[in-house]
Length: 295
Ligand SMILES: [Zn+2]
Image 1 (cartoon, rainbow, N blue to C red):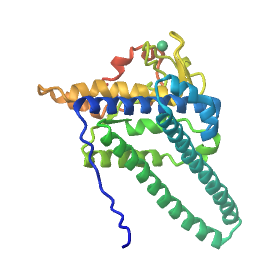
Image 2: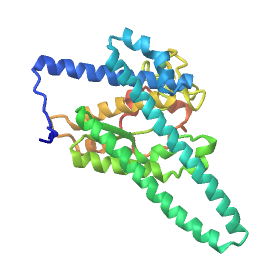
Image 3: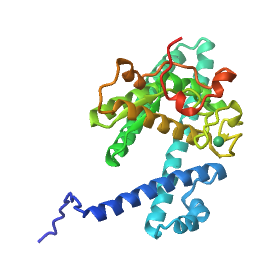
């Protein structure tokens, strides 16, 4: 007799207490991945072995046993591997494109043809990558019962400052495309999706509410000038986006019907981010979450 392999989907039926415990573990793990990825970025350590040396003791101290601790490290390292591969790929593409452009400028018609083909291929590749990213984000949100908040799309392009290498190669519309895919997939999956006002998300302190350009002395770093809270700039911005989304969500999910403009929260007035007058900069963060009249 040949052995037969059966694959069975199994649904766990935990007691409420077990479910709560599982949920707590999942949350702890996710929070730790966040924290560790911040450390990895600060210290520029991205390998599994390096991260293990750097944070294993800390993870154990945070209450994780060996298996989950290694899982957290693996998850962080894998995420960075993917990210770095993407960046390398884009740089290589940009180099080849530049070569062809030089030849095209010199009058080569085959270079012009190849350039056009390459452009189409890169576009397809980018769309494919964006689909994968969007799918993953929406699936994670669905699995963990959470919603997704993004900065209002036009704002993402305004806020993100790209490095010298990326600036030339990464088309701004890719961000827009990713946002569109996430919005579409989230709605299809029934995952709450909100867009929030992007103004000052990278200059607002999520702990004390202080808003100032000087809070972000460097593209990568946030450091509150009033209370001293510091961290990776993108992470801080994400915390602000989440906070604004929660405010907006409280509005849109209120049981009583709201006046007509209440709905406007999800598509707030456009504001070029990171450029505001000094008086605006002094507003507390919760005020910024509300829609402003279009000017
Ligand atoms: Zn602060």
